[in-house]
Image (cartoon, rainbow, N blue to C red; front, side, top):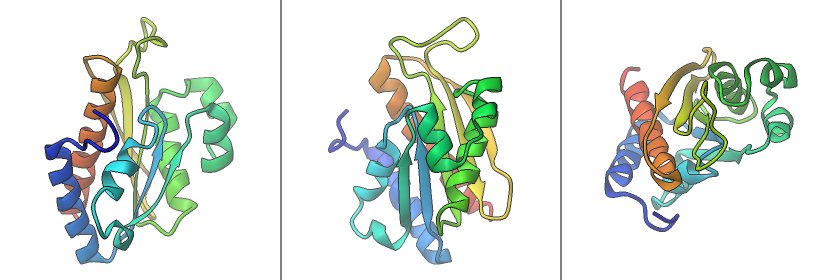
Length: 168
C-alpha cells in the first residue's frame, strides 16, 4: 500500500483522532523509524490536519535518533535501537522538542532482513508520550512482509493514540 493509498480503517482512526485532538485543542507529533513517515503521511492525508498535527520526524538512523530526538547514544548501545527504552526516549524527545501535547514513536524490524533470534522481523515497539508524563511502550510481534508490517504498525499507532486520548 503506497503513501497515497491509506487503508480505510486507518483513515477512519485518523478522523477519530483528529476530532478528539481538535476538541481538546491538542497537537500531535510523531517520531518514526521503521515506518519511515507513514504515520505522519496518514495524518496529513486528512484535510485540515494542520489544526492538530504539529510535526513528524523520521529518525531512521541511530544518529538521527540522537541528534533530532535526544536519544542518548549510550541507551541505543546498551539496549539496541529496537527496544522499549529507545522508543520511550524517542517519544519523550519529540514531545520535549515540539509544542505537541501527545506523541507517538515507533521503532522496529520491518524486514525482510535485519531480524535476529532475539528480535525477529516483525518486532515493533510503539510508545505514546503525553506532555509532562513519561512515555509508555508496547511490544508488538507482527507477521507478514515489509509492507504488511509497516501498515500494521501504522494501524496500531492510530489505535493506541485514540485509546490514550479517549482515556483522558
